Image (cartoon, rainbow, N blue to C red; front, top):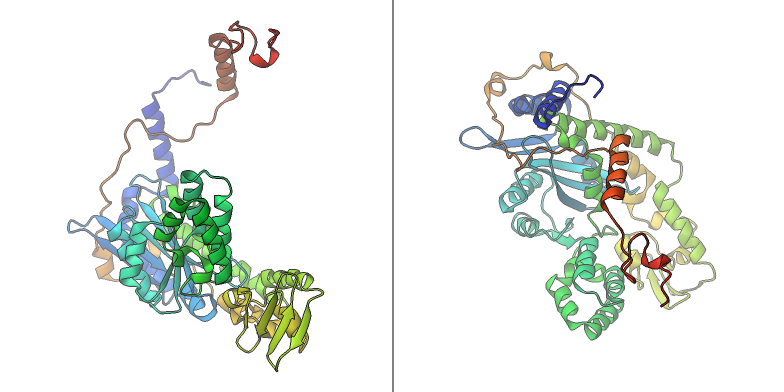
Length: 458
């Protein structure tokens, strides 16, 4: 407009793609760099597990990357719960980014592994979980949380048969809202899922069956062991949704448009920053428990005021609370309310029982929530590649390996990027709407006014 030059939409799009390629790199060339980049990232970060696969003709299929520092931190300091999810890539060759993340003792995201695959199907999820098993072994104390993707369920059952699998309660509630409109049902399902005690869960599920038997059958088919906290076969602590993985996907909203190598380096970049910032934050924290857990304990101390404690022996107590009496066993770290058993943080009944003996709540809290453990999770650094690409020193075998880009999946129609309206566009739109649209009153049928301003008597 400034230079009175008109160009076609496709010409403008090609110019945009050229400019982006000049900054981020050419997508086709990015795939060719995969072997070299993964070799150099492993050199900079010992113990890092990377793997990629190509088809017989050399075209890219799958890629996996997991930093050794985060895996070691997971084994030594984390709750044994991994959240997995997938999200679409928006570059020239599309595909899907798969994410596996844990949550540290301060409720911060702790990414474990990333994968780039063609789509979310049985083959790709099965491959991703087999690679993940190379760094996080299958065990009875391991739990996964995901949405209700059938491919994820099949992969976990096949690759990690000893691990427990839970589904995201948010996705389940979304389906309930969509298919069952009766008032109050969603709240009952949420209460049933959140219940710590099995008896409370049974009460809610009975109410659901009485109100809507069809919904009750739907929830049974969804497998209550996967969505109800009180009957989950493993330990998922308080992680009930896929929000951790979805948060990482949201963080990568812009990098998901990049070619594969800039995408991987964006992941490395934010993990480097997170490890440094949290190492600094935890080193300055002087309380025995992490910031988030100290605040949670403080809230429970306030709620426990007025509770009466009757000691049974050196560890067991009867605590008379506001709703019901609870038996607390500090030796086993349990309470009949169920919250202490599942969350591993003293509940409002356990806190006065602890204070009646000692005033050290942290000594009866799971080690994953202590400041010492929090610091240990970030004691290592995630390192960038120290030399520019022109100085990468890789073995001859890696240098000659060829990786071709996958088949391009071009969308139908002209390429579209989000369009931002200019002031001129908005003015034209408003003028056009005022010229073309003639409002008619739904009461009298005349033009120039609406029902709310109609003078016709009712």
